[in-house]
Image (cartoon, rainbow, N blue to C red; front, side):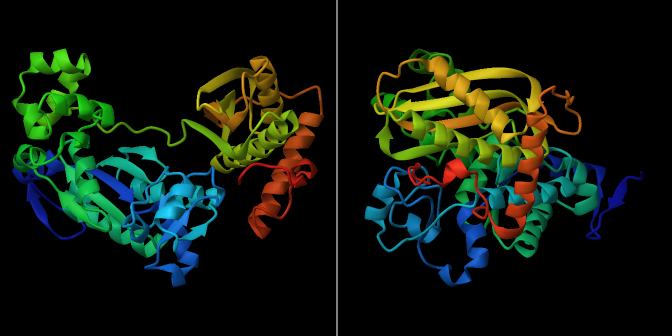
Length: 412
């Protein structure tokens, strides 16, 4: 390759120019109000109105809120009852998780067409290192705008892009340019920009840490940077050095490609706390079907099944078990979940939330398949695969196991 190279946009960069552009080649791309945005594609009449995605039961939480709703103070993970009081005019849409994961796959495919260095953080956001794509696609800002155009044009939703020399600062940038924006914070701008922010903008500084620092007169990132490191270590312990380094924009962690799904699961908060074993069993069966469907959709098998119980006092316990053969069947997941529930023994109080999670995932094509002597395992798998096909054609409530037709179920 000669001293200059031309990319698809027709621009030419010297080697020195490429090195300079690569100093700010980390992108954080985050969809805007993802669940809501996906729903508005099929309900355009709701654009511009306050919209919440979540189950309408009082004990459920907000999964996604439109920016019109956020003006009233509504936030993700807020109890639905609180959100309804803050914004009584909001339109509530029940979530369609399978659809969101399908769109997530399309998002990640766009990212993957730009660079191999993609580190997903959730279904709708990821870090990208585009240093190796500059010759082909242009400067990092051009690449960020390209991604935003493709997400809008191909998927009908909007994305915000932060660009910087480090993951931490790129994440700050994407947060500060939402919604539907792009912000590049160059190396020379990094420290001055960070020092304008409140201390809570730093990774690892939650509400309690903010209170501790405020008592010491430390309220901004600039205050942190001006505090001697030994003092921060004394105040915050082992995290003091981490916070100090971030205050100066120091974050050497590379973008590390990882599989999006480290685990797949589902959980439910009951409308009323329950001690009813039959209701818990029924809910675990429903969650097992939801989890298994997502496993098969992602082409994954699980080696470990985990059960989660949250009691009325909000205390939470988990139990897990690793199986000898990777599984993707709801009935097999359900069987393990029942064993785990039994292993808990006598429960000290009523149950507020129950969940199931499939962990230690393997690609189905690579997972060893052990033929069972009990043909029922294969029969269940075939039946569930047929249910998948019906669901794809007619919707996710077309066919249900008979036990799930009982009205005494959880909130959603």
